[in-house]
Length: 161
Image (cartoon, rainbow, N blue to C red; front, side, top):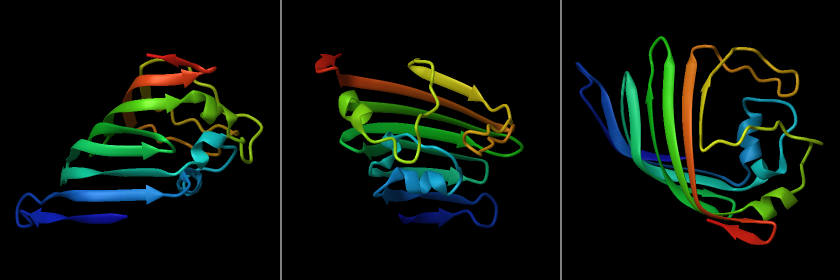
Protein backbone atom coordinates (compact mmCIF):
# COMPACT_ATOMS: atom_id res chain seq x y z
CA UNK A 1 0.00 0.00 0.00
CA UNK A 2 1.28 3.45 -0.91
CA UNK A 3 -0.25 6.70 0.34
CA UNK A 4 0.82 10.29 -0.26
CA UNK A 5 -0.84 13.62 0.29
CA UNK A 6 -1.44 16.62 2.47
CA UNK A 7 -2.75 16.70 6.02
CA UNK A 8 -4.22 20.07 6.98
CA UNK A 9 -6.40 21.73 9.61
CA UNK A 10 -4.93 19.85 12.54
CA UNK A 11 -5.95 22.57 15.01
CA UNK A 12 -9.65 22.63 14.14
CA UNK A 13 -10.88 20.34 11.31
CA UNK A 14 -8.27 17.78 10.26
CA UNK A 15 -8.43 16.84 6.58
CA UNK A 16 -6.37 14.60 4.31
CA UNK A 17 -6.18 15.04 0.53
CA UNK A 18 -3.99 12.73 -1.45
CA UNK A 19 -3.54 9.68 -3.56
CA UNK A 20 -3.18 6.00 -2.77
CA UNK A 21 -2.50 2.64 -4.37
CA UNK A 22 -3.37 -0.77 -2.95
CA UNK A 23 -2.44 -4.03 -4.68
CA UNK A 24 -2.61 -7.69 -3.77
CA UNK A 25 -1.53 -10.69 -5.81
CA UNK A 26 -4.43 -12.66 -4.36
CA UNK A 27 -7.59 -11.00 -3.01
CA UNK A 28 -8.36 -14.11 -0.95
CA UNK A 29 -5.38 -13.31 1.26
CA UNK A 30 -6.90 -9.96 2.19
CA UNK A 31 -10.31 -11.49 2.81
CA UNK A 32 -8.73 -14.12 5.05
CA UNK A 33 -7.57 -11.31 7.34
CA UNK A 34 -11.20 -10.67 8.39
CA UNK A 35 -13.15 -13.82 7.53
CA UNK A 36 -12.82 -17.56 7.75
CA UNK A 37 -14.59 -20.22 5.78
CA UNK A 38 -14.97 -21.18 2.14
CA UNK A 39 -14.14 -18.73 -0.62
CA UNK A 40 -14.97 -18.99 -4.32
CA UNK A 41 -12.11 -19.26 -6.82
CA UNK A 42 -12.87 -15.80 -8.24
CA UNK A 43 -11.34 -14.11 -5.19
CA UNK A 44 -8.00 -15.81 -5.82
CA UNK A 45 -7.14 -13.21 -8.48
CA UNK A 46 -4.87 -10.18 -8.34
CA UNK A 47 -6.52 -6.89 -7.44
CA UNK A 48 -5.37 -3.26 -7.49
CA UNK A 49 -7.04 0.04 -6.70
CA UNK A 50 -5.49 3.47 -7.10
CA UNK A 51 -6.84 6.97 -7.03
CA UNK A 52 -7.34 10.13 -5.06
CA UNK A 53 -9.01 10.50 -1.69
CA UNK A 54 -10.32 13.35 0.42
CA UNK A 55 -11.05 12.54 4.06
CA UNK A 56 -12.04 14.29 7.26
CA UNK A 57 -12.91 13.05 10.73
CA UNK A 58 -16.52 12.41 9.61
CA UNK A 59 -16.38 11.45 5.92
CA UNK A 60 -14.22 10.31 3.01
CA UNK A 61 -14.70 10.30 -0.75
CA UNK A 62 -12.88 9.26 -3.85
CA UNK A 63 -14.25 10.27 -7.23
CA UNK A 64 -11.50 8.89 -9.46
CA UNK A 65 -10.55 5.30 -8.73
CA UNK A 66 -8.87 2.95 -11.20
CA UNK A 67 -9.55 -0.75 -10.66
CA UNK A 68 -8.10 -4.00 -11.86
CA UNK A 69 -9.50 -7.37 -10.80
CA UNK A 70 -7.91 -10.27 -12.62
CA UNK A 71 -8.25 -9.35 -16.31
CA UNK A 72 -11.13 -6.92 -15.70
CA UNK A 73 -10.40 -3.20 -15.53
CA UNK A 74 -12.59 -0.26 -14.72
CA UNK A 75 -13.27 2.82 -12.67
CA UNK A 76 -15.13 3.57 -9.47
CA UNK A 77 -16.15 6.25 -7.05
CA UNK A 78 -16.76 5.78 -3.36
CA UNK A 79 -17.93 7.78 -0.38
CA UNK A 80 -18.36 7.06 3.30
CA UNK A 81 -19.59 8.81 6.40
CA UNK A 82 -18.66 7.56 9.81
CA UNK A 83 -19.63 8.23 13.37
CA UNK A 84 -22.23 6.25 15.30
CA UNK A 85 -23.04 4.45 12.05
CA UNK A 86 -20.83 3.71 9.05
CA UNK A 87 -22.55 4.46 5.75
CA UNK A 88 -20.77 3.84 2.45
CA UNK A 89 -21.64 3.96 -1.25
CA UNK A 90 -19.55 2.49 -4.07
CA UNK A 91 -20.24 2.73 -7.81
CA UNK A 92 -18.14 0.46 -10.04
CA UNK A 93 -17.95 0.51 -13.86
CA UNK A 94 -16.07 -2.38 -15.47
CA UNK A 95 -15.07 -2.40 -19.14
CA UNK A 96 -15.26 -6.10 -19.91
CA UNK A 97 -15.79 -9.17 -17.74
CA UNK A 98 -15.01 -12.71 -18.87
CA UNK A 99 -17.57 -14.65 -16.82
CA UNK A 100 -16.52 -17.91 -18.50
CA UNK A 101 -12.97 -17.62 -17.17
CA UNK A 102 -14.23 -16.65 -13.70
CA UNK A 103 -16.52 -19.70 -13.58
CA UNK A 104 -13.63 -21.91 -14.67
CA UNK A 105 -11.47 -20.89 -11.71
CA UNK A 106 -10.93 -23.62 -9.14
CA UNK A 107 -13.04 -23.05 -6.04
CA UNK A 108 -9.93 -23.07 -3.87
CA UNK A 109 -10.72 -24.46 -0.43
CA UNK A 110 -14.49 -24.48 -0.91
CA UNK A 111 -16.94 -26.78 -2.60
CA UNK A 112 -19.40 -23.94 -3.06
CA UNK A 113 -19.79 -20.21 -2.59
CA UNK A 114 -22.77 -18.26 -1.26
CA UNK A 115 -25.21 -17.34 -4.00
CA UNK A 116 -26.49 -13.83 -4.64
CA UNK A 117 -29.61 -12.50 -6.25
CA UNK A 118 -28.75 -10.74 -9.53
CA UNK A 119 -29.33 -6.99 -9.36
CA UNK A 120 -27.46 -4.05 -10.83
CA UNK A 121 -27.45 -2.32 -7.46
CA UNK A 122 -27.42 -3.97 -4.08
CA UNK A 123 -28.08 -2.22 -0.80
CA UNK A 124 -27.41 -4.12 2.35
CA UNK A 125 -28.33 -3.05 5.84
CA UNK A 126 -26.29 -5.47 7.91
CA UNK A 127 -28.31 -7.73 10.16
CA UNK A 128 -25.46 -8.48 12.53
CA UNK A 129 -26.10 -12.21 12.29
CA UNK A 130 -23.04 -14.37 11.73
CA UNK A 131 -23.28 -17.34 9.42
CA UNK A 132 -21.62 -20.62 10.16
CA UNK A 133 -20.44 -20.85 6.54
CA UNK A 134 -18.30 -17.71 6.61
CA UNK A 135 -17.43 -17.21 10.26
CA UNK A 136 -17.82 -13.47 9.65
CA UNK A 137 -20.24 -11.08 11.25
CA UNK A 138 -21.09 -7.71 9.74
CA UNK A 139 -21.72 -5.21 12.53
CA UNK A 140 -25.29 -3.94 12.69
CA UNK A 141 -24.21 -0.30 12.47
CA UNK A 142 -22.88 -0.57 8.89
CA UNK A 143 -24.94 0.34 5.81
CA UNK A 144 -23.40 -0.16 2.35
CA UNK A 145 -24.71 0.46 -1.16
CA UNK A 146 -22.92 -0.98 -4.20
CA UNK A 147 -23.71 -0.18 -7.85
CA UNK A 148 -22.15 -2.19 -10.67
CA UNK A 149 -22.13 -1.49 -14.41
CA UNK A 150 -20.44 -3.79 -16.93
CA UNK A 151 -19.92 -2.56 -20.51
CA UNK A 152 -19.64 -6.10 -21.94
CA UNK A 153 -19.42 -9.62 -20.59
CA UNK A 154 -18.38 -12.91 -22.15
CA UNK A 155 -20.69 -15.74 -21.09
CA UNK A 156 -20.93 -19.21 -22.64
CA UNK A 157 -18.80 -18.03 -25.52
CA UNK A 158 -21.07 -15.13 -26.43
CA UNK A 159 -20.83 -11.42 -25.70
CA UNK A 160 -23.47 -9.68 -23.61
CA UNK A 161 -23.73 -5.90 -23.92
